[in-house]
Image 1 (cartoon, rainbow, N blue to C red):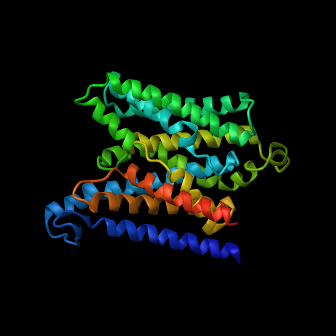
Image 2 (cartoon, one colour):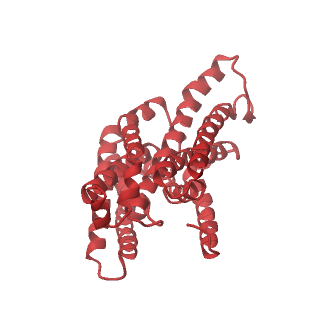
Image 3 (cartoon, rainbow, N blue to C red):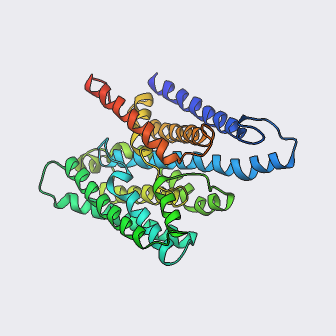
Length: 328
């Protein structure tokens, strides 16, 4: 009964994603602020097909990927407070991208390769440091090592900003720090699809494995899993997918932390339905935040600021419910 209810929710979320995506195609400032269903002029068709459509598709892909990566991290580390940003992955990727921007220039392929390398390096450092810490339990050590790695890459990124060209490079780096979809184009969307889409698909296909990998080592092995190898594989896939997204959107926080909690509250703890639920809720959340950011005020708000503000508020509500006996 619960399974049928969860699957019904999935189909409803799927339909809602398409509905919101379709409506936001006609939301903007041309020919007037708000909704406009005018397709009679060439300019309005160009705006919808060449500006809004790639932006909406990128928002859906980014929301789904960041949420799926956060869900994967939380299941594998059995820690509801973990997501790629908390382990320094996002900060490592930002440092790698800034390094290319300053010393080579904006080269998409090199920027993505550098971001992936430093994101994986950050994940490796956080995991290794947690194993060597002698203070507290595993979960606490993992969070503390993530904080340390994040601080290291954030400080190195700040150092790069000091030597960046203030008329050009510094603007690109500042974009990375705030996050945004205002420069979404078909070219940028297509440049990340060859890696981001397979990563998303792999996490979806391996969602049933996450139930096993969330168990302790011996139990997971006894049930037919190869815990160490499969955890490394799925963490790598989640990290690469996250890095590909933020290589074109910049740092967008809190989605990977908050959305998996919302999905588990709606779908239950079974990752076979909670993971796709997380993808769909993440896509809807990104669409709503982006629509608000580009239409609520005269100038556009960076989406990273909106997701951080809303995410922190939801986080406080979730923790308050936990204190009252609810499920986290």
